[in-house]
Image (cartoon, rainbow, N blue to C red; front, side, top):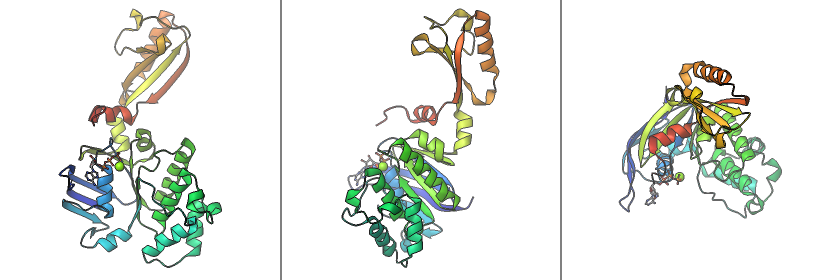
Length: 310
Ligand SMILES: Nc1ncnc2c1ncn2[C@@H]1O[C@H](COP(=O)(O)OP(=O)(O)OP(=O)(O)O)[C@@H](O)[C@H]1O
Ligand SMILES: [Mg+2]
């Protein structure tokens, strides 16, 4: 893997004395989608702000495209587009001007064709002459993304890109991120939404209390720790789990006795499901629906950091 971002032993102590990052080391490969997952206050924004140069580090090194982000900050910064967690826009500026202005800050020449393509990509072309103040929250978020992409960066940081965004826009955002990745842009995103990391990321890093607890390929993380789940909807609710079903692996009675839920190892194949269905048939218990799925990153995450750690 050729890292486009290389972080070594990065620590941050804020002037208040609070240690927000504790010796974090991480390499991000060119062209991957990397998700940083962690509860509120874990240090996600601090980490990406340091890489992007908007917060200073206390110790450690950060290389962006091989350039040190302090001693060669200008070259490092040019490679990066940042969509911050908080929306901050000049509300009286038009959409097109906001984006043009951001491009100009990086000394890039005006390129009407590029601007048109970018705004169309983000479904903002029709709004190009609208002032930011006239836009909905979701549109403002897209303007933030357009600004971050205005100087054609190789790496895009998205800090909570879909916080407070409705389901449709979230899906649009995911599609956009994939299109960018297909064009070779490296994406680092932070999220609380486990579903989002699960849906989007090639690799996931879990941060808690300033430490990077693990970094793993999403698929192998799911395989290693993931469980499969079978949910059986019964024709008639059961008051308690019948003895006939009480063998290992035993299902759990859910939803007021209307459903049976069975969890089993993802690597184990269909044996546990077949065994349960066989026992249901032999006990004469009728069912009306079957549903299988993967247990989510959420289960893994809660197992790692515990609930409500902060
Ligand atoms: N400027 C600052 N001065 C002092 N402490 C800060 C400062 N900025 C952040 N912190 C603290 O550092 C810790 C990490 O904050 P950070 O914003 O990086 O977390 P986060 O993982 O992005 O959280 P969230 O999910 O809520 O966005 C928090 O405890 C926060 O209060
Ligand atoms: Mg944050």
